[in-house]
Length: 422
Image (tube, rainbow, N blue to C red; front, side, top):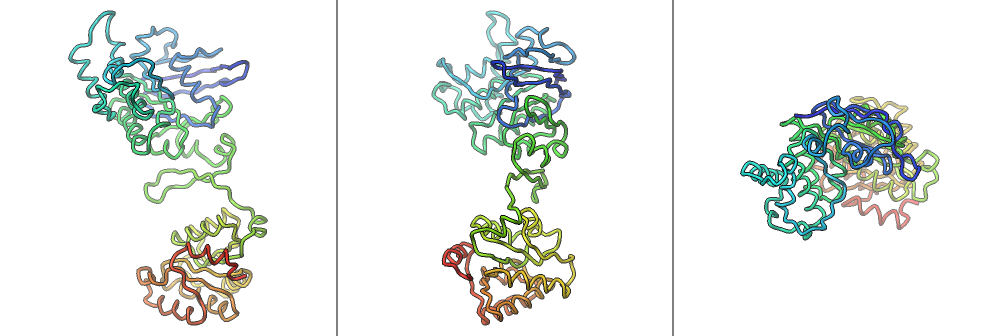
């Protein structure tokens, strides 16, 4: 099973507007490929050329070294199955009838399907989760249900290559995962070559291992995720700034399209200046909350590897950086105290406490003595986050000196809106 697909110098235009321009690439037998690119990049047009719905102006497409035009319609249907982007239902066929159409490439004229064909239809419907719809009219189904029925028909063809054009567009998150995992399973178990046009990059990287990025009808990059899905390629192809990172739970490459603030924008923000103590994942919701409300932020002290430090660099924020597993020196302490003095208020997120970060609060106490407003979030839950045995006593001491306790980050909104700390 599986076929090699070679595309050489493909060109095609709609009303003199070029859509594909010298598009060339090779998909090896058994590859699992996601076609990526912005709207209008040529993804759907390319798949329609491979599936013979469209005829390119020039160029060639080879299946296992043989020109696509050399296959008759039945041969091509046994080689490739297509799940289109949109499914129309003009006739009142049942779901089982639609899926059975996947067996037509294997039947002679006037030949009736046999028990083997019916068994393949049954298994295909089970694999795609549409067995319970077998007797329903295709016209009565939702868009997502129709999409799964068409996927069942494609599976029923038992193709060597599966072409998917935005197959998850009408599906909820559960069926998106099921359908793409089914494509991956066919690839894994039967070596079916899969090419799918996918809009959602973060969905694609979970299910595919090779990627082709189109831009302006040309191949901008092809290869593994690390080679194709880069901030520079995303910027050039989609026209937006982006950052890429490894998800901390499953390790898969992810894309985040988030516009960072320049240092000038951070200084001129309309909200109050807020210094956020410490970092780590626990501080990120607080930083995001305040950033979205236009606050002028500063961060620290944190280590260079800390997620709070990465947040600060992405948004061009002032930050105090200390070496990991070491105490702050005099320079760090002065930098920290200066950031608090420059801020309208200081916020202590619900961060974990250990021996390493307790000295940070010496400067917080100094800021309180100088009349700086300090807000501590979730003092009640500090014992769950305290690995030093001293954090509660330290924070309660700050409260005695005038720090205010907030139960949740949401309470910061009222503080900001009321002009607290100004």
